[in-house]
Length: 169
Image (cartoon, rainbow, N blue to C red; front, top):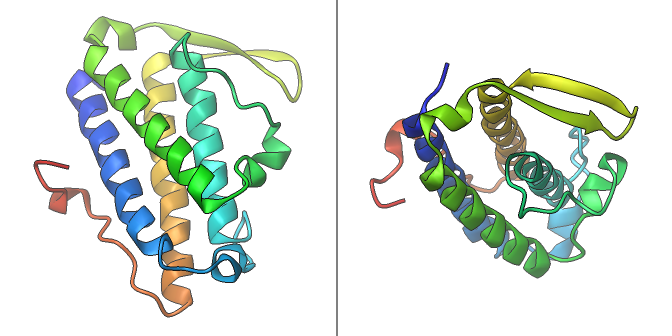
């Protein structure tokens, strides 16, 4: 389904996209970040927090040194309390994700991943490659929502086309 080169590219794309978003949200005030756009997670900040929460959850399943988020999914929009805290945690997670991608082998993507879905206590079993693909798809989906909120509020939004990602991103 996928191989290490895909994971490396998507980890690099993830960091590039998040760095661009940081540049855009850095110039926004708190009211703009918290404005309810009627998006699924409400605000830009809520969506960015949910995305960080989801990445942390998936990475805790892939890497034994990453702790699962300390808030339940129902509170994922508030997992950081400020833009500065979000930026620091986002930077750390993106770095951890890139290290993970660099240390993977193709065999690490084979087989199943098993975890307990905390909301129901149910054990889930899925192909590891599908789970990795889902994590990257989840990121792209929610960054697209942030992009839509930025443009709906009259702001520019970052370039998101994978084919325009710089080689040094």
